[in-house]
Image 1 (cartoon, rainbow over the protein chains, first blue to last red):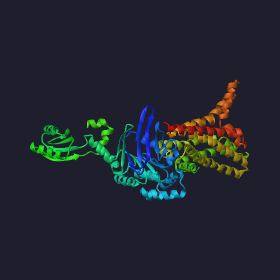
Image 2 (cartoon, chains in turn yellow, orange):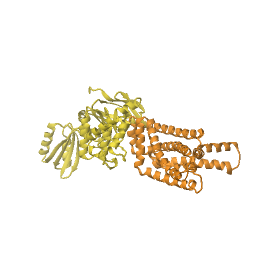
Image 3 (cartoon, rainbow over the protein chains, first blue to last red):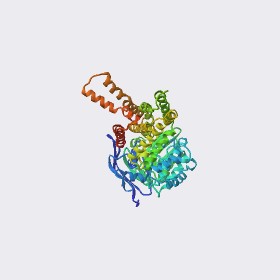
Image 4 (cartoon, each protein chain N blue to C red):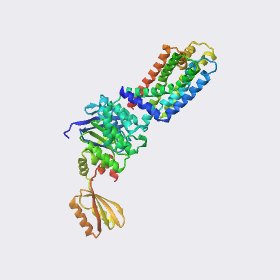
Length: 322
Length: 248
C-alpha cells in the first residue's frame, strides 16, 4: 500500500432529490492496482463510477483521479481515463475498426497512433478477426470486448470497468479476467462487479458498498479474516443417519457450537453447525456421533467465503434470517 | 475542431447507414418534384425556379424533424451518451458536432433538388445568381430548422416525441403564424393597434416571408438576422438542456 493513490475519493455524496444514492463515502485506489468495487444492485456503484468518470457532478465531496479533481479538471481527467459503461453501448451500424477510429479521434489522437493502437487493442481483446465486422452482427461477448478495447485505446493510466464480464460465456469470462489481471501494474483498474469469485481472482483490494455507504475495504484475505472474526464465519455441515431432533440437540450442546440448524431431516439428516469450530472440535463431534450409535456419513467445513461476508454485511436482515 | 468534425462525420454516415436518411431524401425529392412541375415547369412560363424555393419549407418542416429526431434522443436511450460525455470533449463540441453533422446531411438533401435546376436549364436560361441566393436561403432556413430539431432531441430520449415536438414547432413557424397573421389582416378587417402589432410579430416569425426574398434574389439583412438569430437561440437552448441534464 506504499504506492501513491491514483483515485482518491473524499466524503463523496450524490443525492437524487431526497434519496441519497451515495452517502459520504471515502476510499483510495493505489496506483497500478486492480481494485474490486463490490455491491449488490442499487448500492450506488454505478453512481459512484459516474461521478469518477465525470459523467455527473457530485452533490458534495471531492474525487480526484491522477491528482486532478473530477469537477474542476474534468477534461484532463477524462483524457487519462478509460471507461467501460455498463452494457457497453455502441454504434451498431458502424464497423469495429471504424468505431475505434471514431473513438480515437474523439480523444484527439492522431491518425498514425490510432491505427497502431487499434491493432494492439484488437489483438489484446481477441477482436483481430472481427475488425471489419459491423457491430450489429457481433455477439454480446464481442461487443463487451469492443467496449474494453475502446477503454484501452488511448492507453490511459486509469481504467474504470463497470461489470465487464456480464453477458460473456464462461471461457470468455476467464479470458477477460486474465486480461484484467494482466492490466495490473500498467494501469490502475477500478472494477465494478457483483460477482464475488471475480474479485477473489483478479483484485488485490476490495471495496464493498451497500445502500450508498462503504461497508468494508481491504484485501480479499483481510476481508475473509474479518468474516471469520465475526464468529459465524466457520461452519460445519454434517450428514448423519439417526433421529434428527436428538442429533441436533446433542450437537448444539457441545461447547463452542453457537448454532445448530437442521437442513434436512429424512432418514439421513443434515445439520449445519456454526461457531468456534477448530480441528479438535471435529474429532469430538465424530466421537459423539459414534458413541450415540448414529452413523456419520459426511462432515465437511463450509469455511468463511467472501460471499458469506458479502451477504452478511450488505444484507444484515438476510444474514440474521439464515 | 477535429473532434467536432469526427462527431459530425459520424452523424452524416449514421444517417446514410439508416433507412431514415434515404426515406427523407426520397420524400423530399418527390415533393420538390411536385412543386417543380406544378409551379415552375409550365408551358410558356419564364424559366424562374423561384416558387420552388419559396414554398420549399412546406416540405422541409415535415422532413427535417425525422432527420434530427435521433441526434440526442438515441444517445440517451442507448446509453451511448455516457461514452460520449466521459470522452474528453466539451458539451459545446458535442453540440456543434451534432449540428454540423445534421447540417451536412441537410445540404445533401437540398442539393438533390439541383436536378430540377438542371432540367430547367435544358429548356431555358434561369438566373443562376437567383438560384444561388435561393440555396443560401435554404441553407440559413436549414440552420433554424435543424437547431429546433436538435433542441427537442436533446429534451427527450423518445425519438418520436422529439420528432413530433419539432414538427409542431416548425408547422407553427412555417404555416400557422402566417395563416393567423393573414386572417387577422384581411378577414377580420379591424384595426386595433395591439392586433396590428400581433400581426406584425406573427408575420416576422413566419418562415415564408423571409424565404421569398431569397427566392427572388434579394439578400435582406432582416431575413439573415431572422434565420441566424433563431438558429442561435435554439442552439443556445440546446446547450442549456445538455448542461442541465448533468445535474439531474
